[in-house]
Image (cartoon, rainbow, N blue to C red; front, side, top):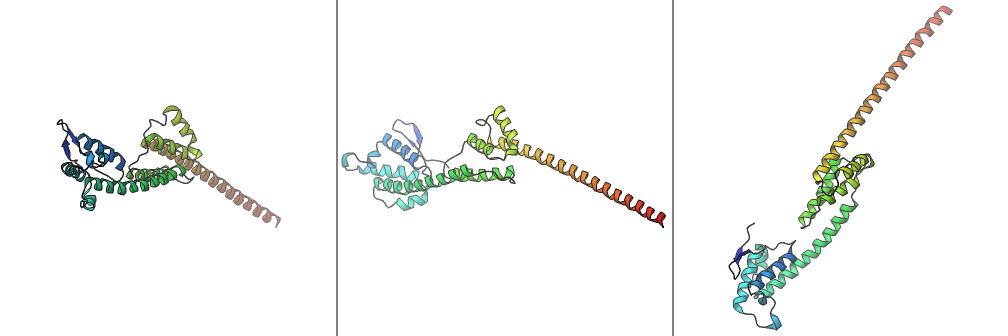
Length: 233
């Protein structure tokens, strides 16, 4: 999204930040600095209740209107002063920020409590982690790769312990990308499945061999028994 560009008194161009529901606090800090540099912040926060200069009030209107989404603009457009608009935005977005913080806290608790189940695959578990990360990102926050890798390695079952120790000793968790950690765990998981399949096949072949020998012995035993009875007769 392109942002409206203005020029400071010295002719240096700057961009007016667009207000979003997840960044109100930083937006308000930037806007205050920009309008103060333009000499119009006093229309928002008049010193010692001095009457606001109408020209500065209109200029502040223009700055704010360029920085808010259209749906919000329609809601505040009828406010008479830039100060009233500013206060309306503050009430609206600070309330949204409180809701956002509560949701982030809930997601973080969910993230910390998540553990990989014994029958769960790496893909399944990584998908759950990625789902939480996506929700977290939609609220304007992020998880660092190091945090995700550490969570992944701490949550896998004991059968991955050997690989986890190898990663910690040889690669480290702070610099490894999350996708790389997933890839290494998936490759190890595939080897475990292959080994388990080979053992299972060997066991089945051994059992079939034993069963075959048992049947052969029974057949041989039965034939000898019959021959013995014939001689007795």
